[in-house]
Image (cartoon, rainbow, N blue to C red; front, side, top):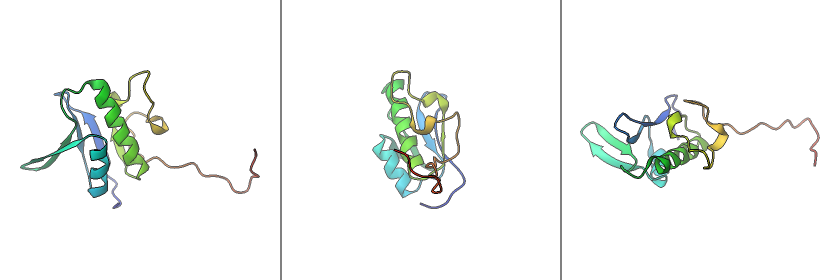
Length: 117
């Protein structure tokens, strides 16, 4: 993965479609594909979106899943808060604060303290 300070943005647009914008390289494209996003060529590049009319609940789950995978792979992700899963569904990894642009980081263990069981 190349180091990039611009986040990959996943958002619901005015027309209701869920789209991805930003620096999507080959690995990010594979992760988005695995989460159910489709890639359509346009005159200005590639349009990355979820299929239309699958229902907001399913779109929210897929978008959050994509954000989790991208974040776990070290990408900066800007997830639209309206895409968080509805109540009763799995919550996203790391709590996803609104409009986060920070990649998830694993906790740092303090090696000077003894391990408790």
